[in-house]
Structures are given as C-alpha cells and as structure tokens.
Image 1 (tube, rainbow, N blue to C red):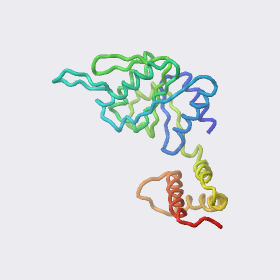
Image 2 (cartoon, one colour):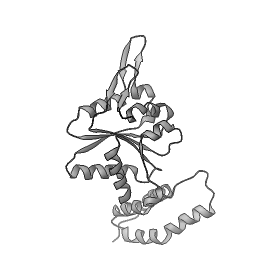
Image 3 (spheres, one colour):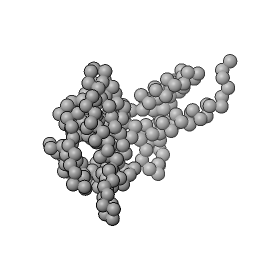
Image 4 (cartoon, rainbow, N blue to C red):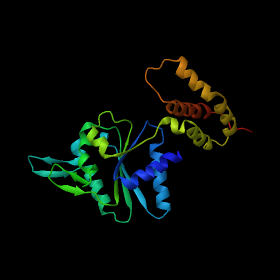
Length: 231
C-alpha cells in the first residue's frame, strides 16, 4: 500500500496526466484520496473533481453544436475544466473514473501532450493550468491506443497488493457486538474457503477474491441483523 502511494506521488510530480490502473476494489480511489489528504495536510491544498465519462455521451461530455439554431452547448467535462482553471487556491485533480472508451480517450491526446490543451468541436481551445492534473481511474486499457497510453504515466494497482484483509478489518470495525467472534471466524475459514472456491468450483464469470468477500460481508450483515441483543 505504501509503495503505491509513493509511486502515485512521484508520478504526479513529473506528469500532468496519468492513469491509475487495476481491478475494482484494489484500492485505486483510496490511494488517490489518501494522497490528496496527506498533501493538503502538509500545506498544498488538493481537491478532486470526479466524473464517469461512460455515463454520458461524447457530445454531453465535450459539448455539441446545434446546427439548426447554431448554438453551442457546453459539455460537462469542459465545464469542470473551466471551474478547475479558475480555482487558484487549490491544486485540482480532474478524475475520469470509468471504463476506457475509444471515443473519449482519443480526445485526451492533446490534453496529455506537453502543450496541455483541450480542443473542442466549437474550435475553442482550453489550456490546462499548472494547478491541474488529469487523472484516469480505469480497469483496463484494452481499447486505448498506444498514442494515449504512451503519453500518460501509469500506476498499476493489483488486487494482490492489499488482498481482502483491509476490507474485512474495516468491516469488523463497524461491528461492535460480534467483532471478536467474527474476526476469529474470518481468520479461521476465509482463506481456505476462497482457495476451495478457486480450485473446486466452476464460476460462470471471473470474480475477484475481494468481490466474493464484500458479498460475504453483506450476507453476514443481513443474516445477523435479526439477532437479539446479547444480555
């Protein structure tokens, strides 16, 4: 965990655009927010603006021109960009948190270049200020072109880096009544159960250990919710 934080810190010192890569639950968001809090605490205020580029269409993200009315509608991403540019007090990390798509990622090439410009369809060009960092929080780069990948710094966070234990620890911290009993049960059975599932069971789709553990914790919460308070 510490190593990834250091890599993240060092990468953002030398790159204005970088990708944090890894499966969901591996700790990408936690690493980013932890580093931002640490940097804010040490005197350089940082804040993030986060959006999911796949939740909207490319025209909604970058802006679109209504040909009939000849009106330009500003995109969400461009609006966030302007807002971050105006903020001179904070360092802003603009995080695109969602699957990479060939359409929007290619528009980022000019942003990731040394001249740091966002080119819109309207012909307008917005400069990336020195206070801004462009970040991508993605699971894989299957559809990203070499042009994009080579321009960005990349930090890979594997689900094996932290494993499932930190999740279980934080889950148990929220359970005061049965924390010690559950803790012993998790320690005794969970690793063996996960090994059994991997070796003996056939799954319809690949599921990471952490996803199985989060589902387990949800089930445990549901099953224990009706139990009476201990005397």
